[in-house]
Amino acid sequence: MARVAKKKAKAKRVAKAKPAAKANTGTSPVVAKAQKAVDSAAKALDAQLDRVGKARARVQKSGSATAKQSLASANAKLREQRLKVAEAKLGLAKASAMDSVRQAEESAKKAVADMAEKLSAKAEKEREKAVKAFESRWKKSRAKADAKKVKAAEKKATAKVKAAAKKAAAKAKALEKKAAVKAKAEAKKAAKAASKKKAVKKSAAKKTTAKKAPKKSPGRPKKSTVKKAAAKKAATKAKKSAPKKSARRGRPPKAAAKKAGARRGRPPKKS
Image (cartoon, rainbow, N blue to C red; front, side, top):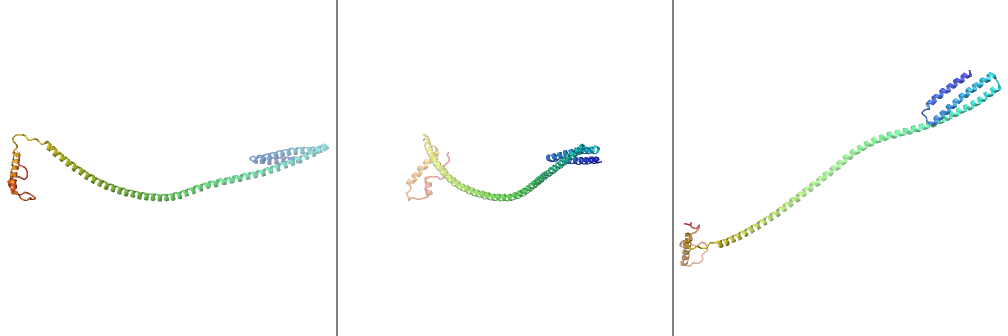
């Protein structure tokens, strides 16, 4: 009966150890090593229990001193093996505790990193929002300031254009006046030169006419020339025979003119 109970206890320990090993498959190498030591110690303990059971059976069967000595030795080794199992379990507990600390640290680090990432993403979104708001305000303010500057520049440019136009108009007026004076002087000078040229031309024409006058040809003179010469002679005679009078200004008396045979106006036609 005792042997059956021991076998049941052994199966129970193995069943407990296997889930633990499965549970610790994803743990750190230290915990895995400790678990391996526990499993090895438990296996050795089970083997020693078998040896103790066999020794006890031999004692019960024979009752000899050798069998008893073998049982005592097996029990001593069983106690040692139980201590080893206890030590292995303690090491496993320590490794598990340290691993849990490590896992907690990693979890904490991961949580902090996740929070930092979330806060960074949130900060980035808020920064973009703030930048957009600032940019919108800045654009409005800048547009207002630029509009003022443009208006002032337009006003200045208009004033400058007006001043330039006024200056140009005054300059044009002065130039027109100067040109008019110059044109007047030039016209006067040209008129004077033309008058002088005309006089010179007239004088030259007279000289040319005098030079080109034909010589009196012998023979019978023309009737008009004879009449003119007769009229001139008659006038000379009348003047000599007439009594001397005081000098009279103006037109000569008609009678003297008739006596002299002088004729005013167009000369007589040639016969």
